[in-house]
Length: 176
Image (tube, rainbow, N blue to C red; front, side):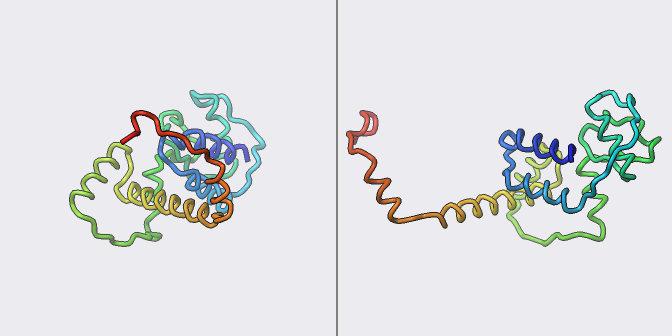
């Protein structure tokens, strides 16, 4: 539970800066809750890691007999191999675990669009496929949000709202 709460808090705190829809974060957290299992830590390995804030992750991975710790902070987990763990970046994890579970579809895009996506993906240290998938997911999430808001539309409420706006002269810079 503490790990799920930390993932959710950190992701939501950084969502706007990274242009990640909250829907995306909620989807990922739900997936972790669905696929994960609760593990109790009955022993400590502390101190072992250079960042004391990471110790509980190592203890949880060991207690849960995990195969790997997935993180961008690979250097923070140096030496965990002695606990039978690998340390993988998210990209490495996805590449390793896509084999046999590939869900890709071929989509033709103009070369200039692909090249722009490849440039941005490289800057973000993700594959073009991951970048495009995230862009499509964000677009679908935006569409879903707009549709959910549109479903709440009431002509009567709209007309009342318009009546509540007073008539006034436009500001000088807006006049024709």
